[in-house]
Length: 289
Image (cartoon, rainbow, N blue to C red):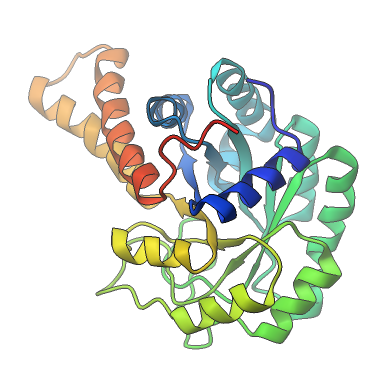
């Protein structure tokens, strides 16, 4: 399938709003789970985002990540978006665009609002020239993350006036909002602030993004989608499914196994996890325009 342009990505988000689904988005670690994610999307006939987290980008380099994704996207029969996730570096966002990423996240949510706006705007200016979609973030996503500064404070909820400024002055295409969601595994039950979600949906004319999907019950995720969430990020659940699948095979059959024999089981584990989230996002059968 051809790589999607920014306008096509915008149209997909708009269709999600009309048809009541969110685009499922999954972090990958390498080519094996990248392929598994897309295979699951093809089986469900769902659009999907392949998300490259900062450690993967730094370890492999943007050129290699883009090359792998380009081939996977070309072979796919569903819409696949290749997204740079949680980049705190405008330079990495600009570099990723040059390598062919068609979506990037400029995460400057740790900065005061003026700095956040300036960083996102710098990326958006170049993205418009390249036809690339840009996500920004406002508020803080709680919890521990291997690639984002861990945040455990109480002032994690986004402020509406700051969110309005970020959207209007930066020109971003979508917005991740802090509404009590967290990266990694939740300590206790997730506490999603639906009042803040309604405030964002009522006042911001932009697709809203839910980070920290892992651990949020299906009914709560779907309530978020009904409340305006158009993209749901899942990372930890995919990472763990991948490693647990590989471990299961190694523990069952011992040492001296061929790589593919192990990866086949790991990929099946990833596919099952991805299929669960595609269904949770109401995205089954939503690949077709």
